[in-house]
Length: 302
Image 1: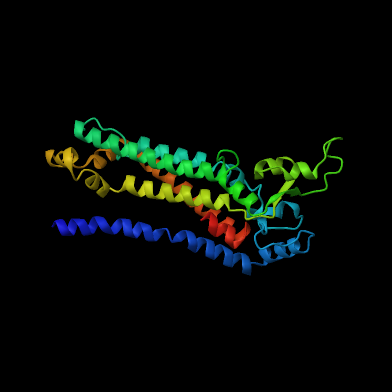
Image 2: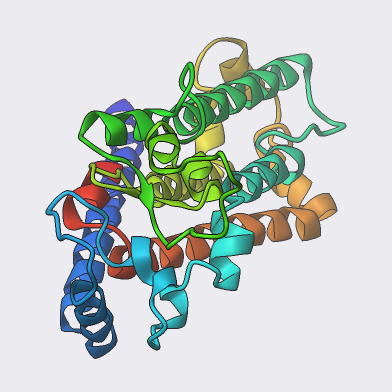
C-alpha cells in the first residue's frame, strides 16, 4: 500500500513538469506562424525596406512597428489594450491572482473546526507559498527592473553592443544647447532611451515580455493546481502532528470540502481569476512569439 501511495504521489509532479513544454511549443508555433502569415511578411517587407541596417541580434519586427504606417495585426501594435493594461502591469495581475488564492482557497484559508496542528500546517503552507512568490518576484525584478542600476536585460543589451540610437529626426525637438547623439548613447536602459526619443538597437535584447509571461503563468498555474487539488492536503500532512490530525476524525480529514460549503463562491472565482490571468498570459506570449523579437531573443527570454 505504501508503494502504491508513493507511486501515485510521484506521478503528478512528472506530469506537471511535462506541461512546461507548452512554452517552447508556443514559441515555436508563434515563430512558424510569423513566417507564413501574409500580414507578418508584409510588415517585415516594410521594415526591411527602411533605412535601418539588419542585424541577426537586433530586435526584429515589433521593436520598430510603431514607426510603420502600414496596416498590421492589432496584437502587433504596442498600444493594443491587452499589452497596455495587462502585460505592461502583468506583475500586478499576477500578485492579485496569487493573493486571491491565499485568501479564498481552503488550502490556505482558516477554518473554525481546525485543530492547532492543522492551523500550524496551514500556516507553514502559506509561508512556503509566499516564499515562492517572493523568489519569482525577485527574479522578475532583477531581470527587468533593477539590478544595482540597470536591469540584467538592459545590461546584457549594452554588453552585446546595443545602445540608444535616434529613432526619428528630432530636429526642432531638442532645445538649443542640448546636443543629442552623445546624450542618447549614454542612456543605459530601454525605458530612459524611449523617453528621450531614442531607439534601443544594436544588441541582444532578451525578451522581457517572454520572461515575465512564462514566469507569471507557470507560477500561477502550479499554485492553482496545488491549491485546488484535495490530494495535496494528504501530502502536506503525511508526517508529524499533521499526520496525526488526519486520524483524529473524518471531518478533520476533509477541510477542503468543509470550506467549499461555506466559501465556494469566492473559492471558485479566485480560481477563475487565476486561470483567466494564465490564459490571457499564454495568449500574449503567443502574440509575442509571432510579432516581437528575434528567435534568439525569445528563446533566451524563455
